[in-house]
Length: 271
Ligand SMILES: Nc1ncnc2c1ncn2[C@@H]1O[C@H](COP(=O)(O)OP(=O)(O)OP(=O)(O)O)[C@@H](O)[C@H]1O
Image (cartoon, rainbow, N blue to C red; front, top):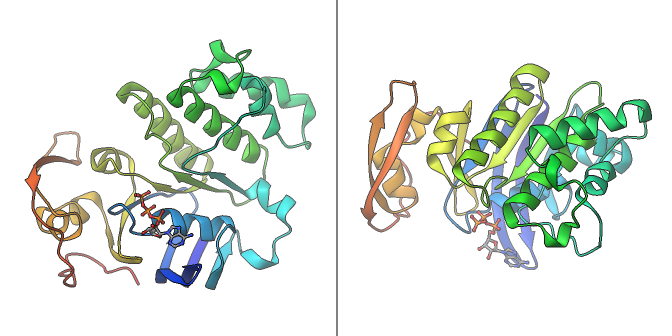
């Protein structure tokens, strides 16, 4: 496993937020973390990013998080937080270059060119970042994070917190196709928080559902995205349509009230 989270608890201030979560992501796997607002998804990602005080064990690329030297770890683990505010007058190209490893300077220009082009932001390269739109900045941040781990040999982990939330539907597809290729073709392990259930159904290899600081279910889109689970976890009614493409489509029908009772184990229950 590239990421192994074992019995992790996180408290912020005196408030317990994440309660005994266990979750792992293998090389080449794209796992999407779902759950209602406030479920603890970002806090869990912050724990794996080393940005939240944590009890329990987090293993990244075969080594406990606490044992990694930060500089070496940054080449194996790329983190895209939910919000990045850049108020410095840097151009888009300079921001991508910030992520580059010093290991292969000869490839730097080619790599920057490639990332800007793949994420469809080449035309913005000389623009100052504070003036970019939300969706443009989001694609730029992903390019920076991809640059950071591009030249690493061995296990690589990508943590993405709502990396498509500001994107139009076409750019959501561009970005998630890129992330999926990174996993399938280069073996990167990806843990991504998303709210869009249909994007999760389309792209994830496995879904993990969080509720109230716990991982309550994990499985395929077909196992996790059922009317019963969506009602119990989010509190809305939905019709699930099986698409010929091979994944389910969630059609929301109206609000109910999220339940707090334990979920009926419709699939393997996460720890
Ligand atoms: N510093 C803090 N002190 C106390 N509680 C906090 C602190 N920071 C966050 N929280 C609370 O922790 C809970 C989990 O927050 P988190 O951001 O992890 O949720 P999330 O699942 O990512 O939600 P969203 O989908 O809205 O982004 C929330 O109820 C939030 O208000």
